[in-house]
Length: 496
Ligand code: N01
Image (cartoon, rainbow, N blue to C red; front, top):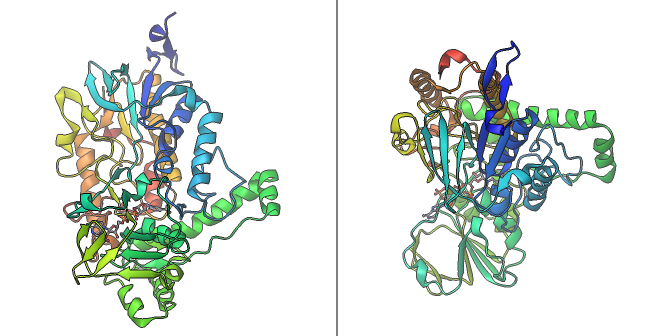
């Protein structure tokens, strides 16, 4: 029998619809996860990846000093623990190798079409027509968008940037052909990326200039190495590893996750104290003044680093706070008239975080364009489902939890939730499922109401805020996220 004619039979003996075919867009952390979970349930899937390898953000970011400031053991799939992490927080290259290994071991590579950028998805007569830039076309019952958040680079238009005679690139487009040792290196930005870059490059550069528009709060955290004995114990005793992960998780969730959603919480006050004390370790009062933010701890995503302040205090490092006026052939001219001569200029200027699956054109039921639905900002019920876009779900989508915790765990909760809706289709309970417009509106209204108590709205600008100044993030407790994603409330879904 041809695959397309095969039928599933539900547990109650009812005959379901033909075997599902699912398209997963993106082969980063979330796409690999989706493919594995679909395979586990015997569901066919094709993974579309516009790059030439898996790994998503860990493939694209290769800058010196790249690491994950979330504990490595927590930043792993529950079904593929990794006793071999060398330290509390892993380096980017090791994380990339981990995702590559999982994708290989779980057969995801065979299902992935590389160099295949999906340009259009159109819902027509109960299924999604998919088109790729390379001309490939397919038809799928279900689509999972796993396209990431920090993906589209933000390249500000600095006047004269095209005249710069040195090398210039965004931190997520690192040019490894450019020499760094003994060079005059400038970095624009002071986010998590710039802090990691400073720590890695100050020791290598002749001179290092950090162009700061806004100071950042820095939470120190030592990257404790794991000994060979500890690794052997984790290998031999998975329970011990799970115990460690539970502790790492609880520490972050009980502290940070509670802190950010309640600006008046004692948890936030405790974190703020540590950041203030950390700042006091900067010896030169003038430098300390320049490094002092004018907003509250936690308003922007915390920079987690035990090395940044040390790096920026080195004699060859300079914190430049005069605004950038323009870029000239020799370097960066600041408003105080100083020309900062440079060989290499790195734009650690962050990402356009409201894109999600776009620029892929997604046309839902009755010709509705996702771009129009999201004209005022991206929305999705529980961050996963959009009304009138049946059988289309997002992982780490709009307003999903983001911050200093494990997006791997977030995606795992979401995929288990989505799989329950997929199983409804497999059982033949329905053939189309998407959030109702009412559920989407209610969720968004509650989310915006909860946002008013968060630290993110206490007077700073950050990538957490949308163009209307509302945090584009999960503004409830993390416990609520876990509860809400445990099982779908079917009354919030329109099924046909
Ligand atoms: O980007 P950012 P990032 N002129 O948006 C400045 C994750 N991450 O790549 O604050 C001058 O935080 C901008 O200034 P301001 C993590 O989630 C994780 O560092 O807007 N400056 C800011 O200083 C993180 O939050 C890890 O005034 C300009 C900087 O550029 C997210 O990625 C490691 C400018 C951008 O900071 C993004 O971090 C690294 C302009 N025109 C990153 N435009 C982990 O370890 C922008 N800036 C997990």
